[in-house]
Length: 258
Image (tube, rainbow, N blue to C red; front, side):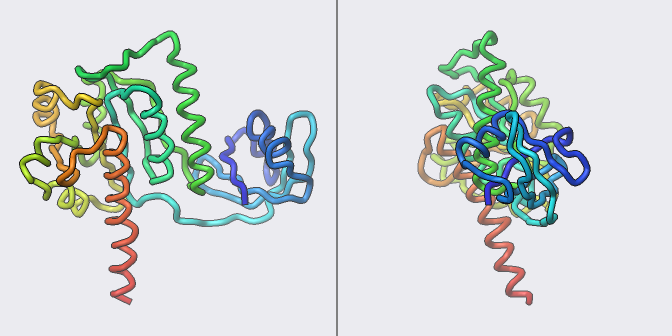
């Protein structure tokens, strides 16, 4: 069943009035008709099956017929921060990272970033990134939208780290030194409801000064295994590892207790 993230202002009691791009998608792309059903997800994470009653004037009017509860979110909030990569790599990270359960995406300007952020195009860029995240969240049947931000400075990124429970940065020197225990240990220490900021460098990696500043600010340097990963692959690896630890392994442990 197709799902759509809707705002509080689009809900009127037991009715939902959808407009804009989602209304176009329902009417023109999906070619839905009255009495067809959709799933609406509200900002508080609640979701409901809704029956379409009317499609007219670029609006879709639907009625809530059943509230649903689904556990589709990671038990821990993981924020992905990355030195702005070139091309479409960042958009790939947002799309696939959303599918894998990321809570937010924070690009930042790093010393070795090839991409130079154009402030004049900032609003349109961020709007596009949010659209990519929204579509990926709908496809993955998530119950919350990830937070997608405009690029931060390196100092702003470090300051954001103070707002979460755990901080790490992927550092290739840890992999080259065969020091692979930090990430499994950190994931095991996280508690349900906790938060993690995972920082990844651009194509050229972190400068020595950046790595030192992160360490001094409480960020744990981590290996992502024995192979050196591309900048767009690394955050997806981490999210997959977290999903394995927190969803697949956790389910296995619960099954054994039963």
